[in-house]
Image (cartoon, rainbow, N blue to C red; front, side, top):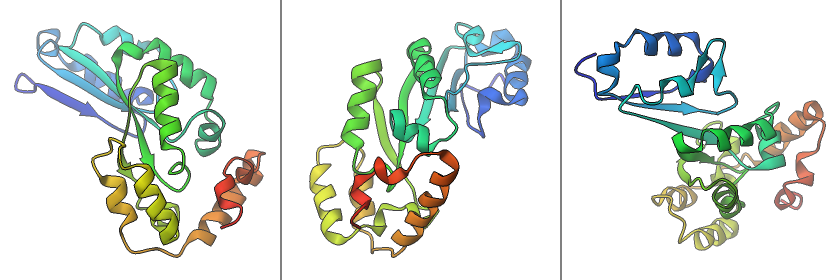
Length: 207
């Protein structure tokens, strides 16, 4: 451990895994102070039993959180059901000083709203959003299922979005033909989640 300068812990959800906290406690304090610790987290909880992420602030050289989310407010609640979005947003405020970014994975369920997502998290929490991840599986959630005209419009819409060019590259890939499968999937989830996804995602009503 004395040779380690950076640790990135992903999951599952590390802040809810006993082994995550136990491994942090096993690192001697004299070595913690030389390590930058990064956690990938959905931020549904900041504490687990006797542990709190804030207990490790100051013990490590630096401690940062990369937060995963797919959307905002009601759409986020639907996609990540049964996520408590109010609690999530409260956690964003409480842990703001530790959060390096909110990381959104681009899919059919958010590709029309990326500027709204970016602006919402910045304007309300002062946290930047990244769009460097793209859904490639399951394929029925891929943006490649869109018609070429829509893809072209999205490429133009997001030409100034700081996404590393990932979205454009994905939209330029050959079209997939699984949009009906995506709709059936969302219809099935809607029955269990007690509100209709098409009421929020108007773009798909006429597709």
